[in-house]
Every structure is written in C-alpha cells, then in structure tokens.
Image (tube, rainbow, N blue to C red; front, side):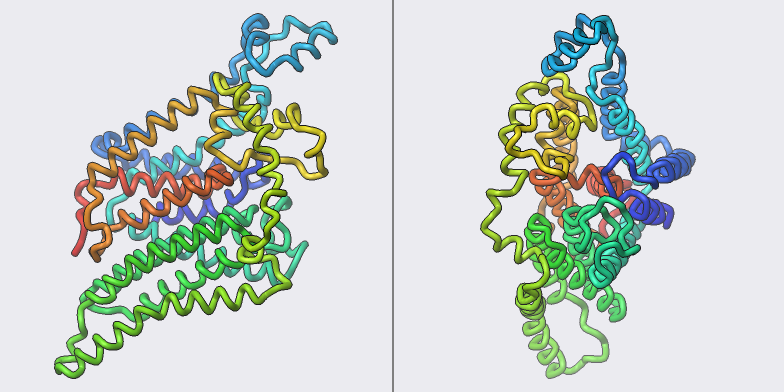
Length: 457
C-alpha cells in the first residue's frame, strides 16, 4: 500500500529539475525501472485493461521519439523545413551525402526517450492503486509539500550558495524547495493545497473526530498557501489563489455537516457549536488576508505579490520572444524539430535584440513547444489523450462534486490537473520528472481507479 508513496518520494528527491545534465537522472531512471518491475509483478489482467489506453499512448509517444532518431537519406532530410542552415554547412564542408536523423539535437532526443521511464513507471505503479492507495498517495504528496516548503524556508534564510539548494542551475535566492525552478515549486504547492483540503474534508466526515490529523492537514494547507505567495512566481500566485478557493469550497460544507461529538447532548451545547461553526467558516479568508498583508509588506523580498504588482510584464523575455517562437512553430509544425531541441533551435532564430548572457531554455508555453519539437504526430497523441481523459471523467460523473463525501477525490484531482494544464500555458511544469509522475498518478486515480474502490460516505 505504501510502495506508490515511496515511489513519489523517490522521484521528488531525484527529479526536481528539467535539464538533461542533472547528476541524479541515472539514479532516477534506474530506480523508476525497478518500481515498474514491482508494479508489473502485481498487475492483474483487469488492471492492464484499465490502464491500456494511457499505456498505448505513452508507447506511441516513445515510438515517435525513437523514429525521430532514425537516420534519413539526404534527399529526404534536405527536403524537411528548417534545415537550410545545416544543408548549407554540409555543402561548404563537402558532406552533402550524410544521413541524419529527423531531430536536430539527437542527444537531447535520446535523453527525452530515456526520460519516458518515469511516466511509464508512474502509470504502472498507479495501475495497482485502489481508494485506500489513492488516499496514501495524497498523504504522501502533502508530506512532500511540507518538506519542500520547509526546505524552501531554509534556502531563503541561508541565501545564495547554500547547500540547501539541490541543483546547480536554479533560482538562487528564491524558495525552490525540492525543485530547481521556483515556478514549478509554487505550482506544486498549489496542488498540495487541494490535496490537504481533500484530506481535511475526509477528517471532518469521520464519526470519530481526530483533532491531531485535522490540525496537521489544516497547517499543511496554510503553509502551502504561504509558499505560493512567497516564491516570487506569478503563475504560482494565481494557481495558489484558485486552489485556496476550491479547497475552501470543499471544506465549508464538510465542516458544517461534520458529526457532532456525543459529549454535546444538550440543545444549548448544539446551538453553541453551530454558532461557533458559523464564525469559524470566516477564519480561512481572514487568515489569508493577513498573510497577503504580511508578505506584501516584505518590500526587501521578491515575492509573488511584488512581481504581480510590477508593471514591466511586457519586458519579460517570454513575451518578447513569442513572435520568434511563432515563426519556429510555422517552420517545424509538421514533423517537429526533435524532442528536447528547443534551446538549440531557438539560437538559430534568436533575434539580435534579444541576445543576452542567459539562454532561453524553453518556450514557456508547453502547448506550443510540443508542436514545435514533436510536430503534428505529438499533437495528435496529446489530442487523443485529452479526449480519452475527458470521456473517462464524464463517465465517472461530475455531479455533486462539492457534496461532502469521504474518499471522493474527483474535485481536488481534477482541479490539480487543470492547474498543471493552465500553468503549461506560461511555463513547463510537466517537463519536471517529479511533476510528471504526480500528474500521471492523478490521472489514473481519477480516470482508471479500481472499480472495487467505492466512494465512502
């Protein structure tokens, strides 16, 4: 029951960055293969059928990556769009007969293909989950978020160059936690708000109220909310706000419908408890307001609020580079430039006005970059995945998601997946192995959970 949680812990400890030269990647991928072997050993025929569609989609994606590495004859390769510069260089060097793969950066595409071990392992591990296992996964994600938040506080206190930063290339001076990028950390903390709220709602609905667990989940949700405000991520701030509202909407009816303890038999005691409940409903928004005022007053820190209030968004490199990215998409949309090729290809198209010492590592719009690097085949695979996921969610029903029901994780998981999809419009959180694994497991829990795992009242 705890193996999927251990898998998530392992992935978050070793896969918090998206670069291809991170030293922990060989350990991450080898460990993922071992977890996948454990999952395969215990999967039954019914489990394979439940995860058949996402497994086929991941296999097709890996196949397309492999095909991009197959050398093509010169006549075919020269006819591909966006290869003019390489063709001209070959002619100058007298090497016009070279066979080249479709991808412009074979080493990075190999890295992308090897990186498929993590989402495949996550899918196989999630295939063995039932409802109790899903609860353990959410508990593990909340615990990981708390550890990451506390590590982020340590990073903020110790400053640049601190050994608390786990990655060499990172947002130094920011609270990145277990990640290399503060935006990814903030979006993960926003998802953790939803998970903590779902678990707290389950505690409210128990017949035997467990105050320690309620306090722990409530504190975790508050901590994650504070981190989304303090990381300096604008996307994280918006995601955190949305997650807080959804979590609040889940908790209010659960708090009001929670079972009263047997120690309150009198009518006066019940009325007093009802009055206290009404006032306590307003506590989370007031606490959030206090957090906003406190954090915004930290003028010497670069927080999410201060960056949101900054009116120089138009000067952001991501905004300035968008016309260039559009031109790249128009060039490579059919077959793609190759998985992982964006930094190298961008240097070909980069205008002189945007040259700077730092390199532009991604399009900061993963929906656009998937078409640029993977081409039309990758876009079709993603489209089929979206259609399958949408149909699976609709088949499980969307009604009464706000009604307090123990073990009903549809709303928090659907909200978390939506946050990741929305964040991918302005960033690339799903290129981080740890968030990849989390997303795959959440999708399986929402769309493919074992039929025997019924919702609990």
